[in-house]
Image (spheres, rainbow over the protein chains, first blue to last red):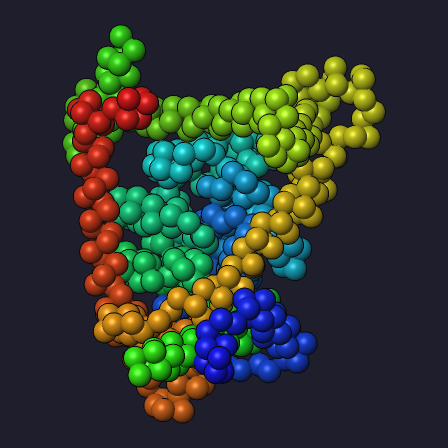
Length: 275
Length: 235
């Protein structure tokens, strides 16, 4: 058995071990390759930047805990950007499992940095089942869908919600998602109610979202951890996504190397079999 | 009767939303009926979640009772459901419904632990058990993808070769180190990949898929509204 045949039958545990090393190495020894910006990330940043100070924006936390490595840095960077401009933020989620908890934890963490007050500067609406009905319903009256906020306080008792009644009172919708809710924010809220929508999504979702960006239905896009790192760079506050870029770079290079070795072995052994 | 009533309900609900979308509701007799229907939808969906919990409890409890294969894991599922649900739905304050009865039995100092707020039991279970487990499961994908890519991603024919080359280029473009590598060949290469691969070929294909799926969804909705499609009733 020659080396290529041996490589073709390589025990998968060696591949797991190499992947483990490729992630561990840059986590310990920071390389810090510069993060280049894509036009889509800049478009999203500019859209938020162009809003007047103190505008009301809606930020959604439509992701499960499993995708937090990619999406949480986007939410944090978005909150920092918005509060730097003193915006008022209404958050909600379409994820029953942990969505409201994630939104609560992240908004409170960033609010502390900026000294923002709950009820005045931001409100967490929490979760309501059936996102299609929720998205349509918010156009008629936010209070009819969410009579209370996440903690059970009536919306009428929260100063911010006294002036935010429907989408008409919101300037921009910033959706962070790991699932199909992003499509619905675009096809329902942007297409039918005219609210500008920008999104941060997981890397696997990003190719689909390009169709909406190109059509002008979406104002900017962040794709995966790289998108989050780009937004962190734009906001000027590097965080966990920027730190994760080295590990992701090494992992991508390892996979490319493995694909090349696998194909080389495939062709050489095929050639030998023919001979 | 079992078939006719659901079909009538589906027809009325579907027709109401379709009509209110295409015709100004203020000009016709339906008024704000579509808005009311949407509020109903969120309420009914809430009940569907409860139905899901009842179903998971019934199925798993039966398996535990019969001690069928894997009954221990099913028991863990049941314990997990109750451990995370009970502290989350219990009364939060003394003034909430049933709160005074609850706090006449248990100490009031338990109040911050109940409900779903920060530092509650639910919050702790989610942040320190559920979330790390979900993240771990997702992170393991990196290892499986690496192994699968090594074994299965082969340039067997022209289409597969094209796919492979595109994938390699996009993988390089999506990370800073890869971008730096691409710039060794041309400074414009990362920009070209974004413009022509992602914004060009990719968008063309995605549009086809999105439009095809939307047409499929529209025709399926019509079939349900008109009572042709009845599989949602289990038939």
